[in-house]
Image (tube, rainbow, N blue to C red):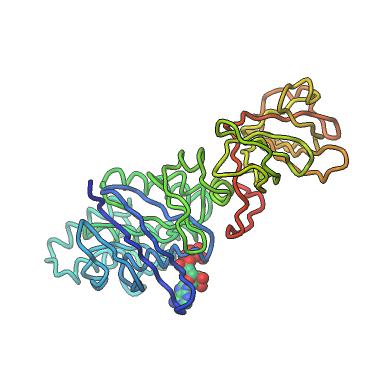
Length: 376
Ligand SMILES: Nc1ncnc2c1ncn2[C@@H]1O[C@H](COP(=O)(O)OP(=O)(O)OP(=O)(O)O)[C@@H](O)[C@H]1O
Ligand SMILES: [Mg+2]
């Protein structure tokens, strides 16, 4: 099937030397909610601005509904845009702000009235139609911006960190509202964020970018469960990273000699014996008990519990792992709260284990930004 939106080998360089967007090829289906997720400077806004028409690619083509739009000016693309800064016209009322895109498209007064009323109703702002932007809260201003981007029934809605300036509670409320609007209208949305929790919550699919390069595209579950590289494993959710050397590979499982002097197993990427690697394993996928590694069984790691932090819905355990005479490494484990600690006490020995298919061994990637453990 033909995609609704296609980036076809798109690149952009501001200095003619470094590509801030590098050879981007990406398809988006009609009606899809796709998020561009990546750290600051990864090229998300530049990608969105090329789509909106405010930036010109240095190579490649952008196609919408089968037709190239790369050389169309922004106002001929029929795309709605919401920016992080609300960018409302300060001298116009809420209703006038929302009517603006209809006005420039030559809609009649009656059409404008009807559509503005419908758009304000959609974002639950009908009562505030005559207010000025300064009389609105941040969340209300962002709803006006959303109504203004939707009012002309655009082919595509682009949102660049639209909730970045809002506090956490309001951000979560607006996330729910954007989800509902997307479901109700069925409009294709491309959403930029550097917040992995927000991307997981909103998206049909997420495109992870780093340093101008697309790292992986997939559903939230696919990215979380099967990250292709250490960057994705660390950026989406939380992972422990344990450096080591591949000892052997058998049936897609790598046996790794960890630098802390103990062996461990993980699903192997494209790796060779003797290659340096890192095992990534999620804190909630590690079993821990106040017994010895021998008692826990084959593949268990000896550890010492350093601290246990109660966080309401779960308990975070920090453990030190390492054989005598080797550099130690620290591992974070999440345990559901309410499960008895069964002798797990700071300062005392414990054992750790995980299913090999719950961990992944990745080649060391010098290009990946070094991410220490990413706190959710
Ligand atoms: N007009 C410009 N001139 C020169 N360099 C630019 C310009 N716009 C962006 N850049 C550079 O391009 C790179 C990507 O910027 P971009 O704004 O796309 O990143 P981003 O992923 O949106 O980051 P953030 O999360 O901080 O908004 C950065 O290194 C930035 O400094
Ligand atoms: Mg940006």
